[in-house]
Length: 532
Image (cartoon, rainbow, N blue to C red; front, side):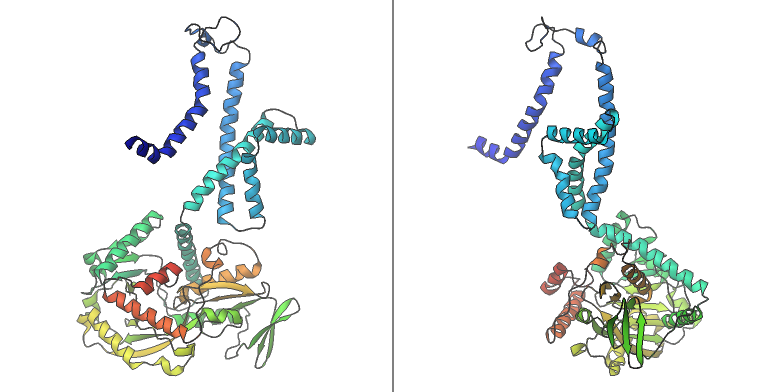
């Protein structure tokens, strides 16, 4: 029957309304009978409508005083319970600490036990403490009553919030501070590394990439991140002219250009001037405990230290359990001869920004100090077994492909020659960004898996390792990025097969409007790749 179907469909709402009515009904009765004029002392049967009780509401002794005190208690108890409950809820959801489970259970006890038991317990506590009963003890008791309800409500809300959005905002803040620190160090130590804080433009060369950049910009705006502008086709080509550019996202201050080798040489000089001893061409063979510290065995002797920070990049980590998390992947780049003033004019690029397209197999390109164009990326070659081989530093077929793609991007530079071509291995992990950890009971920290993004982020990685070695919780060590690890790579031949399938799937997605196949969708679900 329609009526029964309607009742079944709205049963929860009906039950809720009936419960609410049951709770409110006594208050409604009291309010109605305040307009009754009873014949005797008791006011539970209707006699006659009257406003007599409202002519002098404060005529009854202490009535208005009690009302005022109740309102004060209600206000301050609400304020106190909301503030404390919100902080407790955030702590229970966002942080990991000992006895968190026990505190979770204790928080909900006041909701489970009768209020009279809670009141009697607090009264006993106050009397044993010799506390003077009055306003403050009543206020504390009411805050205790309300606290559990606030924690429950706020905790549920916090758990429903996507922590990745908060982490993205925090990473943006930490990244900006990290880049500021690099810029300050370059100036402080007089390092000539061609540092230019010109920003970076992520370029769309396909319609689906343009839509992704629009959505990305909307998310950035929601997070309150400033200094990132969306450029349409005309605005982008006014900055850098290429017929392949459809639009872009310009991070004006979040990225800097520099010469990585000159930075490394400058840092080496600065470290030596500060008394740091550097031993190049000295392999670390093994880590071992030595008293309260560690010893690193080398072919020429041992190095002793209280703490060890490992930045081994593509080379096998001295912490053996970390080795399955990274594999070497070979990346390649070309460098043009210096551009003539006419050639520079043909492409614009007066802002000297770093550029990168938004394909899965992407290119990165920038201007050098002497106006050459560095053009790299696209191919990522994994050698079977993860074996490093200097012969792979040169790959003519990749260089030819990169050259063809360069002239597709900048046809106005036809005839420009390439003066340099090189390749090398980068360490990558399954989430394509760095991971961190400790070993030997916190005496050793490591950072690895930068996936070619290490020029700026290795300084952040060093800060994370120092935090981990100190044993103190910091804003960096609280990041999920720091607390979690990627999925390790399986043994061969499964590693090679998985990487090759992924590479082919990414290329297929680039050729088909960004549509990801089942393999890539599965990786996304598992948190693997750039979408991790």
